[in-house]
Length: 152
Image 1 (cartoon, rainbow, N blue to C red):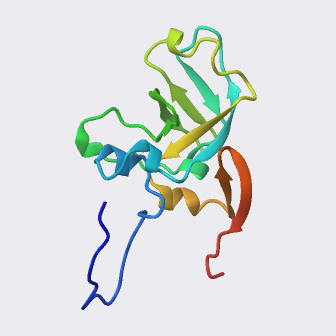
Image 2: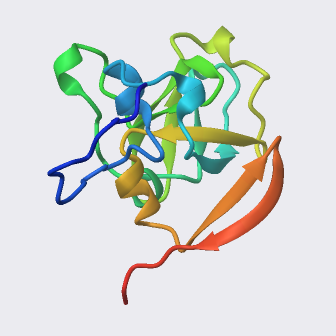
């Protein structure tokens, strides 16, 4: 992606989620999954044997209810599981999300209660608005914590 060479005449900028990207930006071709710089770390709270889904402790308050780019004809979802393109956040309640696979064998024995998964949100702006800080990671290690300023 090229940066602007000349900003003559520009009086304001509205970058939106450009600094983070999100699942929507990936799906419409603005970036690659590796470019997304925000995710929600969720814990598996339920996974029944033989089920094609498991439940995590990240719902609408963490991910929002934004379904992403519905005009693309894809199955509606509330996010995706990082590094697992076969999984989507199929539904959310206030505090929980249901992660669904196409069939039970795709997840059988792979996601145990207490295990963490990273969820790529559909709309990073809505997601970050629900949290008080960013946890800055590098190579899987916590490097810093940044307080989110909201002008309150």
